[in-house]
Image (cartoon, rainbow, N blue to C red; front, side, top):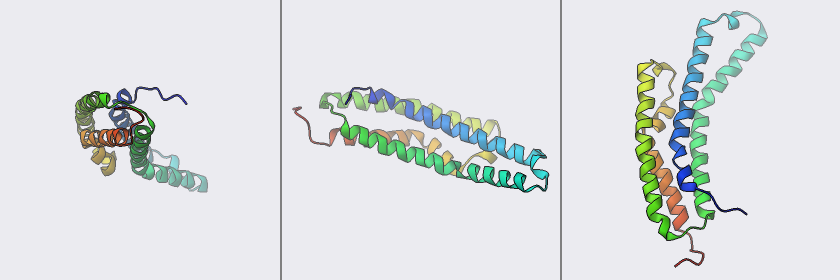
Length: 161
């Protein structure tokens, strides 16, 4: 089994991916609301059109819960990755620095998401759950990094001093 990798640097991608996924969900909900309200596609009395509209609405309503499941799966995967990787305690300082850099990256991303929502008038399409996680993205990254570091260094050492 190949246990080499660059997990600490991969943690930098977490806030970027979360903001990207959050913006994609926001735009998908915005486009769906615009199509639903301003299109005559669903105005017919055919059964197929109403079934398609209902199925699409159910999918759009599930987006916030899908986002929460993505965050939970990131938490679980970071914990498992940290537990199964062998590492020397020397890398603890490097890990703390990487988490600090990730928090510094997460803060402007969080602010950018907030300004995109307010300036482009997408507030009506935003979800409170997604907005809660993205606005508190630096705290979320700190929590995810702490879980990873706890899982990485709390297990029994495998021959290290």
